[in-house]
Image (cartoon, rainbow, N blue to C red; front, side):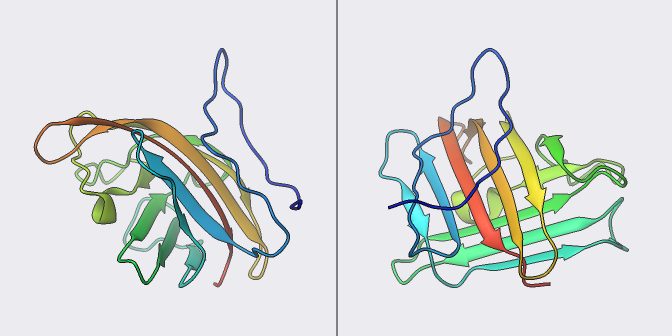
Length: 159
């Protein structure tokens, strides 16, 4: 099987893409792998919204969520650069009103301490078109245990 084009940003000297899934039967997906655990792939209950006027934030905002019937969930929130949406972002600092970046802490038991995840926003289409983000890095959970994570979002923009 094959899939359409998915945009990536490669960082030298090495970029981890995690596990790549591709097939025509899947219209949108969220996938991520934590440590050496099985990859979580969410295909249903996906919602992606982009707001150009982030009235409560420093810039435009992005919300992407997904879940399945096995109690897996994913929630990403981002505050984007004002003029150039596409690009590389780090972890969003909730305490810094001027900060831009992404946050995926809510569903994953992720602490804000020692969060070294890099997010690459490579496409943000109009409503009905794709939003593509890949991410990888390390973080600590709420007990201070270190983890690694890689992931990919290829989702249709709902609003």
